[in-house]
Amino acid sequence: MSTIAELMRVLQFGDSLLPVGAFSFSNGLESAVQFGVVHDLATLRDFVRSSVEQAATSDGVAVLSAFRAAQLGDAQGIDLADHAVFERKLNEEMRTMTTRMGRKLAEMSERVLGPEASAINGWLARIRAGATPGCMPVAQALVFLALGLSERDAFAVHQYGVASMMANASLRLMRIHYLDVQSILFEVNADAGAAYDRVAAHSLEDMAAFAPAFDVLASLHVGSFVRMFMN
Image 1 (cartoon, rainbow, N blue to C red):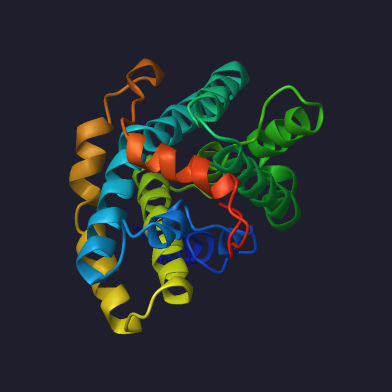
Image 2: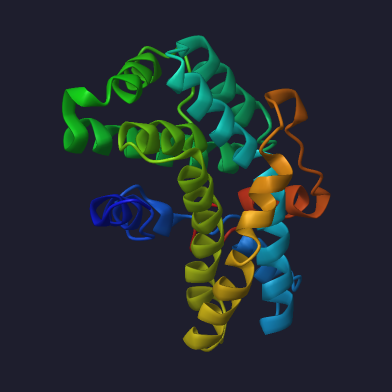
């Protein structure tokens, strides 16, 4: 951070209350609670940490790839990152989550940032035309570039968003103290710098997330009769 204004931009666009619909999703936590995979503070901590680690090597790589493509004015590279995220979501609910939030963030940025955000406005036009899906990690990359912030900032906010979405959902799904949830966030966020260092040199071909338990839980959620979240 070189200025107070830049810090404020990170806080604004990294806020868990940003109006992009994150409150509607649990990132798989609801099914994990329903089926007993997550049932106390320790299992919640493990589930959130695992999710964030998986996010770093998959969607986090796309954040960096899209950011760098946008720096070069490479619209095709941006869309390649977008498709890479979408194609690695194995179930409909996860695809709905990432595209709904991505499009909402792009629309918000079009309104807030105006014509100066040329890369994200062009990307939004391609989303509306059906040329690219519009996934959240790509939206975050383009917004942070438009704000004059770094790829590290974009990656950090992406990782924080994954953890905070699940932390906020846990308060509605479990009997858990809200300060314990903040402790989990504090612990998990401490690993973000090391995660960035691990994936900074990765390309889209290196994107990977082996999480069969998450995928099974997500598939079970689709058929759930009673549910609070959209995934």
